[in-house]
Image (cartoon, rainbow, N blue to C red):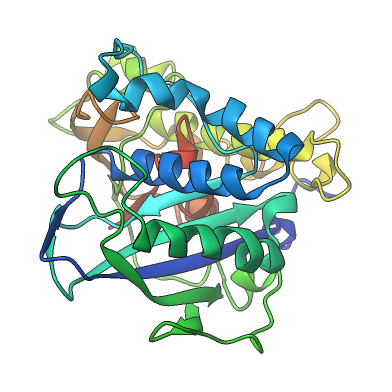
Length: 342
């Protein structure tokens, strides 16, 4: 592969995106501040209970650090640092931003993303969907809150992404078994923003994020013009974002399973990220302003808010679009590290 950028490599990522819609059937439910975490814990526990002993042990071991963090009723000490845990498969649980309280008949939206070997529609139908159904009719799971959602919802709909279009898998509670889903259809027709003429200058985080190196790079920024402060200039924020994308792809490319990406799709012989080569100056895009605040202590991730740059070069927009889809930084399993451009 030459050093010139190509977006065909993006499409080699195995991914299935499900948009899940639950309809509340209780009089009143409230969601915790870190609902993606509770959602992961509850569904993961139900999934483990439905698996063979060997597979169940793998799931329970993966989720064990969340037990002491979430089970406050037993008086367990809550760790000061949020545990960096995930399902034993590559999955992202992205709860759409919205309100925290719901009445009867209202709809709750969240997205499940399955990557790599986990991007298997049969696994979703046979394992994850039944776990959702159980979570909807039983209250014997999750945190013991009087207003918890568990046991108080129906699966109203499930959609799967084909490019920019959501196709129904479940409609009005009815499953369409004729629906054929592949791990490549998520990218069908997507240009990853390469055809957009709009100029972007803001990167707005939809979920909390934590990027290696970004704490130092984001603590100060010039508010009067065109360049980062001296502290920021050694590690530009945009470079931290690209490094986060490279780290995410590097983990998958180094995987030992047959479905792993070929490292040559993204990295040269020296291990450098190929998509940085055409744009060495673009990743140094000056940070004009940061508008960040600390994420709630009960949630994964460090910061929320936005970055304002001088106009973001069009050439790197596709890489940013990819980063927003696959999430970057720590705690991606809980939906951290996704954003949109404005």
